[in-house]
Length: 341
Image (cartoon, rainbow, N blue to C red; front, side):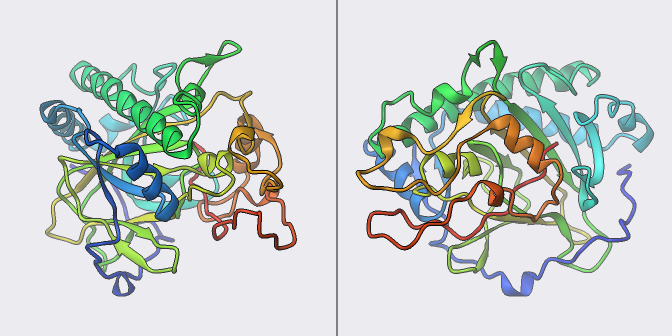
């Protein structure tokens, strides 16, 4: 039994304005020669791409999907027993702590500490750990490709996510989102529009559609589900590190209509340690190029983000506005950042 009641403030998503575009989402074969250049092109152009030949075994992803679906099918009271590790653990409807809601339930887990997973059924916990290990490796390889595509040292970006800084673990999380079929009108918001705050996000979903991304011309397009692929998002932190060369993509999820299969997605978020200084990478900046952002730490960013709503522009306090210059990298439209959990 899915224990979700109708949120009183849930919003409809204007799906009538969202038309499929087969060419909107780039596809990158991670095993192909030239993959690094293709990854960089996708991050410059869209900030989002479909990754094939990524190396995560299908059996591993399928097993996690089945165990997660079984967990979400439990009675609501049983699932609430796993909500004691706030903000980690089980939750439903509420997105963040400032009033945002959606037609979903979820598990939010800390990779570094395991917070949120200790009380889960052992088979689900084991499947999550094994899948997370595999997808972290993919995320690391993609970060290396991004760096090479930018002309940087191969480990320049991966080092910010992997390992520890001054004894602090990186801010890595895994989120399992479950969107049951909604009895309300079609186009109900499962997860409202936002961008992800971290450096990189890697998503895998079942065969139920719902994910939509916004292109730079303002058009929303649906992303065709593909359980055999992974989908990579540029996060806001990476946008800052590249001084706007890579674009953090705004995205949202529409809940399935009545009669449709529930949507289930698993997202790995790779973020830096709290003390990590975030600023455009000096080795990337051209002569005379001006920084589009003030320096800040991940902890400072998180502190500011805790006070905002899902759709707010959380990079705004850190943006620097310059007069037009031929040497300046043009900034993307103001991003909207996902809630800090």
